[in-house]
Length: 442
Ligand code: LLP
Image (tube, rainbow, N blue to C red; front, side, top):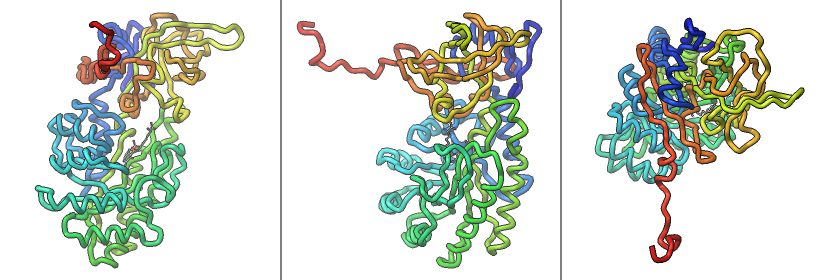
């Protein structure tokens, strides 16, 4: 089992002290469930292990992993920064009362509307992704009312983190960031420094996600610190901050628990490598930022489904269909991601059988777990898929016009609704029947 789960006397699964059967009965399924205490514990752990090892550090949660207004409140209370990547994420933070001077704004193609929203309401660090973005921003920053606009530059350090190709972002051939080759990044930083309207705080990189070894982080740090030194040498300006993105992988399966570095060993490597390279390249220690997403949210989240059809094809397979699927968890079909599950109303029991857990979408690839062993399952059972706290709610869609699930936080053993489930009404709320399609004479 992942996270803080237990089996009660009824043989039901409890998440953070809350019976999942009661949750399913009371709030309906599918439902994303977060253990709020574990979310906070993960945030505090990040702060603690970095602060113990490094003089100045900010932890910015990557909102793309999971974001809603209540999450912004929790992040604010825990003193984290927030990494946003769209006007929508930024708007969520703004509306929740999050301190906007602790928000980072990323994106490789920020829209004019996003530019004006962010410039109007203020930002902690704007992460410039390309020269064409810089050119626009120099114009706009002249009108920024809060002083010089604080910016980072996203650099592609040319490191391959050996994770899934779709979540590899720091290689030279990437849509993100400025390459170091042929002095491209240096020229862009120089341009920003000389324009007079930007407060160039530092540089940023994010090499990828779900990374299971620490070595690529060390390599990226060397490249980034070497570049800080080069900027210092060529411009006489020592940039005071370094943002190393996120990317620490987490186990999705019990058998993978030993395979991923702990947050503490990640901090040890990161802080050690920054210090070592700053000494080597003779630059002062920068204020450090990291942007964890998955490693804060994932284990704290689970999805609760209700089992519907159970179908056995003799000698071939038993299919267990739940009332959600690729619409609320597209990760198996996108990244071949693996999950584990439990029967929430009958956790322990002998006679396990092999089944495939599938969703209700009209698509053969709508498989949540291809092959798993479960206690015999029947219609009406509650099925819990673990480790869905990152990139599930945030990547959910309305494919097949399926309403997206709600989100609850379990706080002190009690469920608190933080995102209401969508209804069928929500699905057609934006539809317009134009005049020419209205029936005549109506
Ligand atoms: N910072 C930046 C600039 C990022 O692009 C990302 C993730 C993060 C931080 C957080 O990375 P994490 O600590 O969560 O690995 N949809 C994919 C993951 C895409 C990650 C994109 N960037 C998935 O479901 O696996």
